[in-house]
Length: 451
Image (cartoon, rainbow, N blue to C red; front, side, top):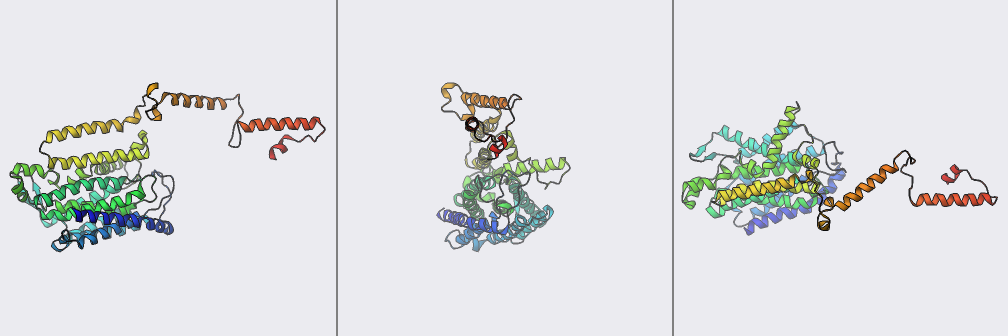
């Protein structure tokens, strides 16, 4: 665990330290696209944050390769090299897209090529652990298609959810922590050596996200762009592929004592297509809803819009930060709920806890729809939006503004002063009348105003 933590901190430190210079480089390179209609931010913000994240990935893998225990992963498996090859290709595509823009179909094709490169180097699903039947071997064609589909789905799920400051990095970090706990328990608790690469990938991914988040929380100073969102999506998909289909249920049965407990333990990895849905259920749901919504309208599934889940949270009335925290909550609920099924045998208790937390989450989600007024004695402890006194003051100010705009009052504009300016004009008028009565020059009001 100390070596994994050292790898995690190395990836986080390198990512954090590189993000500042990368931001300056992005500004100098002009990687600051104008604000689009679907964007939430109000000022042009540099992208290319994926450059720093890729540096954190390389630093984390380099540190792990020189450690005593987890360094054996590089000698016993070719999966770290496969990950680095696919990540380099997808990162280069993202950099080009952040700077100049790349067609959606070209991006999809390169994503499939990057997944194919990893398959050729051994990072693939060899068989599926089907409950009640056992491991089912896959043909090379089936293995390749399933691996490529999982990589493409995960990459685009993360890319679609990257719409608010700190949202994608935080959600992937939460899912990676849950997956790290599961993979580490497989490797250390049950002696499954095939889970070691997935544990390493998860630790590095946590470090990448943690190192980038301080620069990306609202208000963000830099965006990860497609170079970052596609990169962390590919790393997470690689961890899922590495552990899915590589773990022999018979090896776990020798520890659990029964096939039933083994089946219960392996719930999160029964099917690789279900794994990203349980660990990153919210981004995957957003991806499916976006494809259905755009196809129903006759648009391309890759056409951008403002119908994502985080956009709907803002429309309901949540603030930027609260919308991000709500997405964090649901992501953690799904991710850690899936892992809890493999740890605790009392599944009914887990279900009850998940249902209770879901009810709390729904209440917070719908909170802007209801704005109850707190009693007078509680106004000092409730948020300002629920105070009756503030509402009365706001209503009075609105009524006064409407009265000032009524036909009985002259029209006001930006250079008109209502308070002290009016008194100053009265005094000037008084001085003018005094000068006029004393024989002074009678200045025209327009000339006095221009002066």
